Image 1 (cartoon, one colour):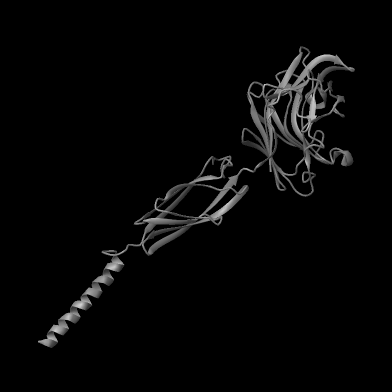
Image 2 (cartoon, rainbow, N blue to C red):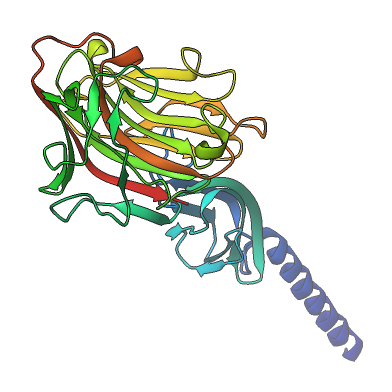
Length: 353
């Protein structure tokens, strides 16, 4: 009888252990390992033209797993998040375009499942220089100087550049370059050309200029552009030239983005064009992204030209900014005989590192 009781007890213990083992594997009555881990990441502002986002660095994550009670996310930049809800927003702050490997684990007590996701995010660089043109009067002398004179420095232009308020003034939050038909120092037109030479120059970055182009018709030639700071010693085109935007009134609404360098100057620059239907009636943002490997041209964040930069080009040194409106010349062409005046308006100039 005693032996039988002991045997029965042993059988009971064996059955109990067996059932526990089965439950652990089957998930009945014990912790169930999470499964079906899904990870999605939507970069804010991402589209076909800007697949890595709008520069904000913000990403909306959505993570889910069956039977998960919490999540641990390694964001690829040294930061870790521990959450009970898999939906969250995170903002990356390192400037430039960077790729991060995201590690995600879904937990249920001691059980977990993991996966990874590779994510490339663009973060806009910090502002290093700007002019918002918010103070009425002459352009800020700490930021801008003037090119004065006629002829357009070899371009056979018809205007005389002055620093008079009749031709260049900051007014109502805008820089206004006014081109006038008038006799002045032997020329039949006046305008202005301002530049940051010896005041501000930079190497690589993003330039954004919001502007409305003059509506004066044939002969007008407004430009937003840059020259290499070594122009005094190297000369042109050895110094390099980056034309962020050029427009000629004889080809209304056709915007040019171009680069000039030895062997690619005059009538043979690296160039492309884009149509901007309301360029003379509405403000648009004209921009370049400039690096050691490429120079990309945009209108309103829409890419229209990419130039492959290498060490063989002069686009790897400091450049300064220029804003002007010429009349006629080699590129501006025939001047409308009925022209009397036009105004080139610039809302701001911003340079990011």
